[in-house]
Image (cartoon, one colour):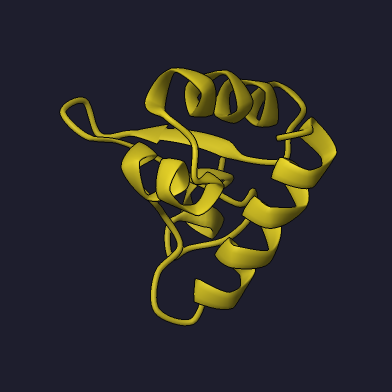
Length: 79
């Protein structure tokens, strides 16, 4: 799968699901891409580096989402 195609697929799918959820597990992204975890990890890491996705961790759980979405988005930028 080409990077631009994977990028658009992730953006489209996560945007559709924003009403019900804003953070997604790596396995969710891997299923969206239809790739094996090793291939999906490279794509997801590149999307994070490019600012298309943001990485979020509670310390025990790692998730990904579109930047600026979710309940904590506003609280995380308060000073």
